[in-house]
Length: 288
Ligand SMILES: [Fe+2]
Picture 1 (cartoon, rainbow, N blue to C red):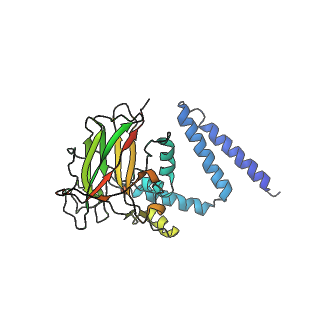
Picture 2 (cartoon, rainbow, N blue to C red; picture 1 turned 120 degrees about the vertical axis):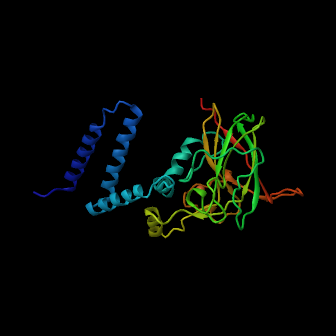
């Protein structure tokens, strides 16, 4: 007796029901929901694609390689999440609930806690770097009512003009282009840095193989990563992107939205030790 398509579909539905039932006793309601819905999604994927045993093997090998590429300074899973738009999908549901909120954006794989505190107007440039365009990035951190938030922490990190983060470039000092600052009594922050440049995400690992297969350019539009936090407010992770960057429309992480794009304009003040100025304000949501 031959197995029909209807039999197969029935068996697949029964299998899915049994597997979900096996996890139905997880006490935490939210965890139970996430696990059983994830199981549902992967079973639907297998049914819709007709995933073969060889393809399943290859998929596991790929994910194993992603895990093996991770270390203290490199997070290949975050990179994979960025490449498939998952990070942006999660972010867009996390912090963009009201008009006027600063959109959140991807954290990327290179955030490191414990950057040094810098004074108002101070510099995060530690190393001399050829081609650096020094810029003052400044603004205010507000709550939704427009009131400046005192003592908010603005934590920033970015690539050097050689397109590398200090985290992965042994030629750079540990704290080059990384720093934290506390806002003043009106919620202001100001730091000197260099105008960021676009860069390629790491292509020497399994995610690089995926980029190559897709014939993508693998470039992130230039950006400064920012994490803004304050007691009583939801932490905002986002980025500031210089206007005019050639990868804004095709950023490999799908992470650039218009409100995060800012002009780095020439400084008009004689005697400034920076050439460019970028003004950018942040709005934090109360943590409720
Ligand atoms: Fe980045």
